[in-house]
Length: 111
Length: 117
Image (cartoon, rainbow over all chains, first blue to last red; front, side, top):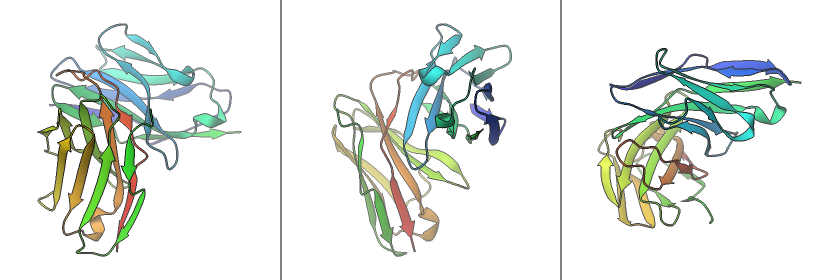
């Protein structure tokens, strides 16, 4: 069975400080893992994806994520938050014919 | 490319009415997905197609929901009869390839906001 858990429903950071959005998954197969971002009243946009190549994946807008098989985690990070990063972030696991979205983490940025 | 196109962008209807949502995927993409997003349940995959054939419809909530893809450039999601609990934002997404492991990127449309009174 597959599942994905986003450990925080809401994260608030100050502008210029690091961002950490946590995601844990379970999968019976070797999964593909994705992070998507959704800005208010918009569709989802891919930030980055892991597809069994390098375990450290770099995405758009300075985001990156590290696949840790031993911890079944795929946490999203950014060294320095910007006001435009305020959005909802979704972790996604895809394996075989199944696609599972996490419940989302709302990222707020304080000036 | 114009991206994934969805219509209408907003739909308000009364309980019991039939609702049809439309999606035009990105040209050349062979996968098409329908999602529903609500505050209570988050983002749910309803159904997806590969080469116009439904692959997994286990997320379709009940028989009132149906989806078709008559050709590679068009898909519909129909709700008949609609109920207030169907109120949500419905997203369509498309992707190219990816095989069984699904490494492909999905491109999302802007969504249709459905309100059932």
